[in-house]
Length: 408
Image: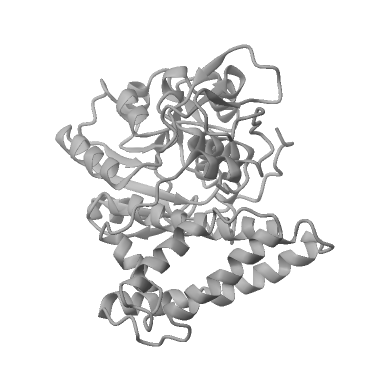
């Protein structure tokens, strides 16, 4: 584990700093939950907290939070209840026997659009108003001035309007609609774009790695080039709305596909696998073959949205991305795809017990994934919870625990 992250100055981010601080409850004091609680405490809000492992919440008591012995006790303490747990199943388990009548439930647990919609119906049926949230930040950004942190919210507009000032204390707020699935959808869409960007960044560094090109000198080139390309998303949006994929095209699909050959040859010359690029290139070639060479590559993405393309995620691709990390350790032969291959996700301390993870998509029967008891203790997870997670989830949770941006 890395050393402690210096505490940043916590300041209220609310648009109305004169509003009287209202009391609230936070369920879950992992890295993100703790950051949220600290921000609200710093702004003068009375906060009641609960965590499955009581000891992990004790430090917040020293900072002014009230510790509840049970989730039911915590929920009964305040009308506004913030939930920030491992996953949607954990939310259901924690609140299974809790009276939610009259409560305003704001779920900041990472999930899918379907999770948000199902949980909203569940909460409404139990007498609560509901907001789902997608946090666009890592814990050190929460409550820090000018960090750029914000949260997508969707669901009850009345709940959002009433509590907007309080919700804006730890991070900016962006309400995206009454559909409770929209917050997660916006969250995952942005994370998906980020994942593609980091795949490209990983490939770019791999190309230069064996040459006399210092990565520190190359990094500024990447950091200036990528933002220069970002405004293209506005043209993409216009094409998707109009259906005119030839509008404003500078480099058409035929030119892009021809250029891909150079990218692939360069990767081969440099001894670098092109597997981070080839799924998208395959999509481009398919769209070209269907007669769209004079159009922009946007059309290929539109085809994928219609279910025309399926890009299964293989275990080898996942492992290639994970090799950049400090924590995962791949045993000999883990990438050979044969039956019985094992990936152990271990802490720096010797493992005493291993617990299985959920297989990554496409790896069923090909690879087995385990996490050590030490890592479960670090993340405050039970073996049953770990069994519902795959290796990608574990990477994200550990990165968040360490307070660094997740890079799949």
